[in-house]
Amino acid sequence: MLEEAFRVEGRVIEALPNGTFRAELANGHRLTAFVTGRTKKDFAGLQPGDKVKLQLTPYDLSVGRILAGTKEFKNESQSVSQKIV
Image: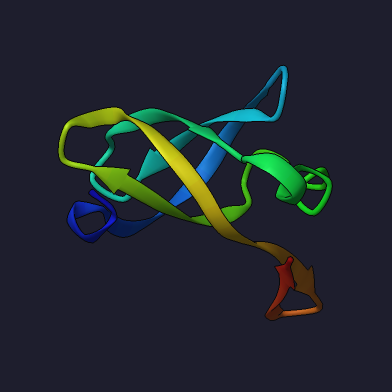
């Protein structure tokens, strides 16, 4: 089943309870994203606007697993990304 999963990039638009987030893909599709197990503490700093990498299965495109995230910081006219993990 894992070989059928695919990865996409999206953006967190809302933080929900219990380590879940509402995310939006580049094509406008919105889904519920979650973080599993030990990685919940690593993603505690995710906030709306952060970019994330998601894993989806073709069976249910309304739910995804967050694999990695980045925070975008504006520093004088430059955009700097900091990886969260």
